[in-house]
Image 1 (cartoon, helix red, strand yellow):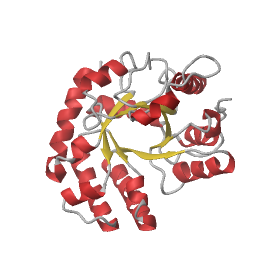
Image 2 (cartoon, helix red, strand yellow):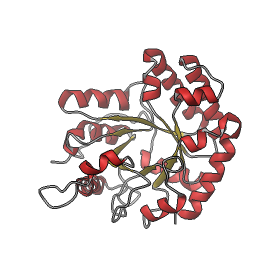
Image 3 (cartoon, helix red, strand yellow):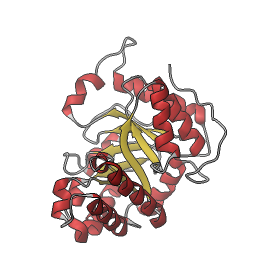
Image 4 (cartoon, helix red, strand yellow):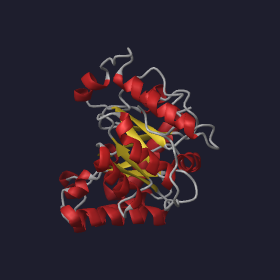
Length: 290
């Protein structure tokens, strides 16, 4: 059973237009790259920053300053903020606020997912609380239908929900490529469920809806053309995927709906080199994605 697309009443705290529309426009204006912001201990140390909430705030401010106008979207990894408790999450909220002021879209890479009232609470946290960015990642392996409260919240608020379907890590292959009772692989079945929700959503982009998919850029899937949502493709650079790999993976997807993502390969350039590194990779990806 897939989530209903009934749209609860309520305002749109993330803006007048849905996430997918804003991504398409931002990619058209700037280029196809999502910069992953992963302030690990090693990264903070390399940047000369302390591994504490103050260091996280400084990291966020440096990234926003360097990337505004160079990439359309950033993706802070929530785990690196959570490890510092409430003060770390306050630094995450500051980073999200900074992206809004700078005109950047932000995806909270939180990978939340559960059932019942728990997933309802996650929906409140990541779509309606101060934690809410422009979109959030979720995992569907308690069943895609269990994400219904988050799908409904995405419709209501105009924020995006990006569902992990096929990851780059080899440990995920056995589960994601397993065959369902209907004969399709788990990842293929998830893509069809997402596509079905987006077809029901419709909209001015010809069916591009609020639910997207996270597809590792190192993976190879038959086609993503009919997804009807944003494709977030992490794994460019340090995880081994090239711009050409991304181009093959997303061939035929509508313009502006693909967000290749790189993190470590950009952050290793340091605060002084981040802007130029992001611009070079963005331009390389723009040539590869047609």
